[in-house]
Length: 473
Image (cartoon, rainbow, N blue to C red; front, side, top):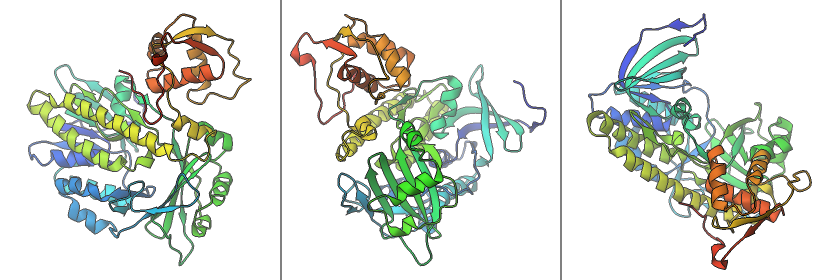
């Protein structure tokens, strides 16, 4: 492997378990591993726990995980646990006051995300773990017998080799192990956040700690932060954001000012930074792990922020990842398959819940953002193509469920007499990241746009789903 001339090399290290990523999932895995007392554990973290994170909240149900990890008292000391409420304008222009997002019962807490992550990392180090900040993985190479050789590069261009017996990938949506092993990630939507942190006017406080407001092009999430600051995030799809130029500061602020229910204090907040975009898409890695490694947190499954379950799920999967590592190191490694099944079932349930959330908003039925999330499948894979008509994408509107090039490639597969099941299989082989549900919706859109006619031998072959998503085996 070629290294830059300026790179400095540090002595190689050997650890039992190397954790890639020091967020909630990585830290919870590390804390659980250190309960044994006979394992050397290192976390490699790109950041340094000093840069402010966007505002978030936690449900009170997370307490059991924090108590299990032995950090509940530290959590209480570092966070404001005063009861708070959310104000949600979703499905109606009139906002509703609820305890925690879409959950009518149960409390939530405002979360200082930076203090939370620092608290977990400090406890990990205090209990004997080694934390390597300002560092990222360059390569992971499997060793002949077992374990990995991992090349790490620091911000100062120092190179270090880590030999480990096991890897827990907690690197988030970027998925270090998935990238190194060239594994397919199934992506269910394109959601991104465009966010800014602002300073509120003096002597001004938000009336609600969390505010959610739906709009034609997506939805906004507003949350209070320590130091009389506010975190404001626009949630939408990349093509919509680009078309609106919503990443431009003036456009972003104008969109915020035009919201119906946003507090005047938020409109008047001083946003000095450029809006930053970051991925918020829902994704699922079917290869949850393998020989001597496992993925946890967003690296294995990531969720729409509307679910408000990202951090609780990260803590839980991190704890489970530690058990899987121990099972692999000291037993037969049978827990990995059980973990994979649990992740799959949990993600399917999440998709159902996410879809139901978006069904509650009906004010903009023709808007692209909502059409993508409210669509139901009304054709069966058992149908066949009866006729395909010339594809002229410039005449009708841009595709909703697939990108333009993907829709064209799908249409090219639609030859008369071919079963839709076969078309889906062929298309999936090329676009591994797309779920079958989205491909079926793409076919359905071709039918609705007049580019495709399908034949149904029996009426019952065409199944309409009004309340649930369809999952094909």
